[in-house]
Length: 56
Image (tube, rainbow, N blue to C red):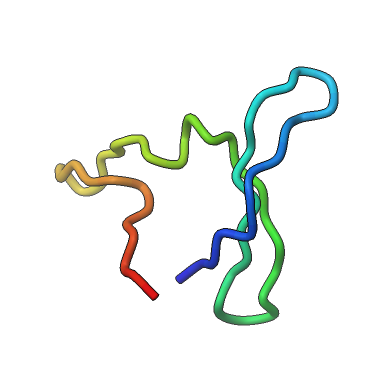
C-alpha cells in the first residue's frame, strides 16, 4: 500500500510526477511519472490498473 504525497513537476521536462510513500518497510519516498500512475498493465495474463484507490 502507498500514500500519495502530492504531484510535482520534473525540473527539466516539466513532466508531472506522482510523489508517494510506501506504507510498509522503511516507508520510502518514491516518484513515478503521472502518466504511468493510472495505466493498465498485464501480469500473468490478466490486465489491471497499476494502482487502485482503496479509500481513507
